[in-house]
Image (cartoon, rainbow, N blue to C red; front, side, top):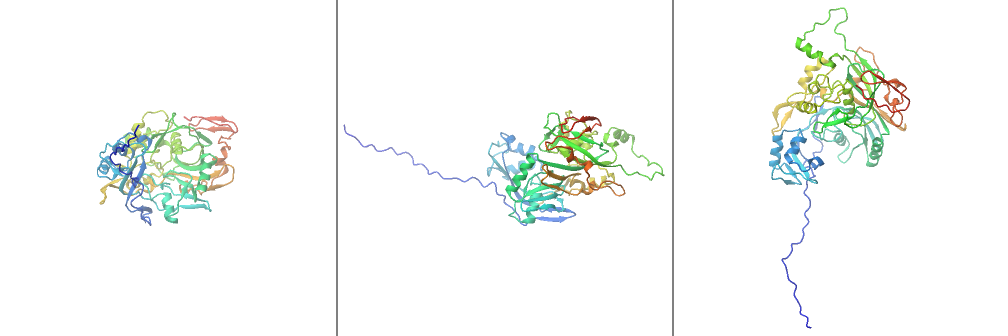
Length: 485
């Protein structure tokens, strides 16, 4: 049998595969150095600059429209701005302009947003150095400065300010986080190994933390424990509330000092005339906080680390931080300031009222010093009605002094094994007011760190007081779970 040679059938020639690199979506088009800082009126300001935000699709964004994500997750600018930014290509997905604002976002997508960035001012107060060695810097963080770039803040953050002071190539590595409005002790690693070691200690809860707060009214004496669970009810606004269905949270409080209000007269003159209208008297009679005169300095020991835990627990106990623009704001929480409230279903109303703060109206906390009330309202950060000549974004006024921080300070961090301890002096607002006597240093009698053992259990014998004034017996080294109110 003869064999015939068969020529192979030639098909269409295939194009050689060409590698297409991923789009360059993670490089900011502008990284000014030196940073565009300038100091003015006691504030650190940043000149506006162009910048690109880059973020991977979050789990809750999957399957949602692009405009819907911007409109619901970000409150920096109105929805009309984000619509225009998407349509003109300033917002892209994976480096490519999208065909519609209804573009569906998928897992793995990189969303980029290039804009003319306007950062809010922060205090010009320098970052204090508590301790520094070859591995770690322990700082005294000023109030009002965020730790990391986030939201409207980038260069006006602890990380970027320290980088600007020590060199562009230096990479500060924060080991603990404080809220933007909170001041106090923070640890910044000089290299990854040192940062990882201390971060592991904090995550393992082998580090004790003590805060100092200034709250409205006369805080109860004795040892106050609050273990109300805390739930986040608005990720967009960062709003949390005491809720039975929230995450476990536990704090020990101990009053350090109480300062009553100054008398209006020297006692020999007539009582000051009450100029309130009948309507105002009726309104005031319904506001529990109106009867809480003076303020207290309270030492706080958080045994868990929930977001806004101390602020929420103090609000629940009926003694919120006196200049807290959220949790001590009656225009948001109503006349009771949510004291003892863990069950109400008014979260949507609370979110709606809070979302208006800082836009058409200024945030307003209840201040002990009411003489500053009108001044603070005028100086509060809010929309001015003016617009940027470059990008047409609405412009904000400078924040007032009362908006640069709250009366909450991380005073001391200590290793529970006693290997190290760092602390700062009391902040100025925690010192006795002029003409009054009071503690200028903390004492062992008011030390909340002495109230727990190595496992974080209260080690107090006798009565422990709750926020409602009731007491409960506690035995040595036993956990105490008691819901106040």
